[in-house]
Image (cartoon, rainbow over all chains, first blue to last red; front, side, top):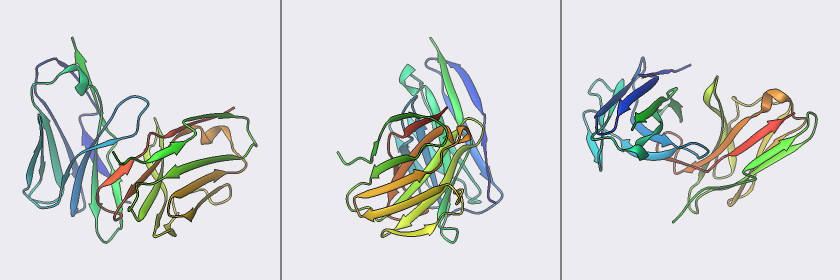
Length: 111
Length: 113
């Protein structure tokens, strides 16, 4: 089945640093979504992208829908302690009628 | 503040017992999903419904798992009999279609001893 390759699997950064993560697929997607999951909670939707090349921001978060429609990127600027968690990408294909999730990027911030 | 709710939040049971998890989707959402999350497998789609009709349950072990939507405000996932390998966090999510924004509940953490 379809798979998303999300990288990196984990990141250890200092507070204040910028963060970049990405997802790539062998398939074309119509939708890219980014979620964040805190410990003991469900994933929370951060950003939704619907068009190739689209660049969308949500506060310090910026995500882009790759022009090939096979990848997406998430950047976090000036990281703060509450950014700690697991970030998931998800791709949606209209024909497949479901989302495919990446394996997640675990973000740890050193004080 | 519309949210997906799930009960119970935690469940510990013994192997062989029946487990029922419940979900209330966001009002107005017509698509409901059940996912299972484990460290090894990540997020797996078990089943989903549109307008209360099951559309895809190919991710679900059919011999012991069943999913239903008795009405638009309630979705259930049952495991009978439960096994230790079913231990995981089970999430319900709802949305307006299957390949776009999905909103997750807080999950049910199931431990089968």
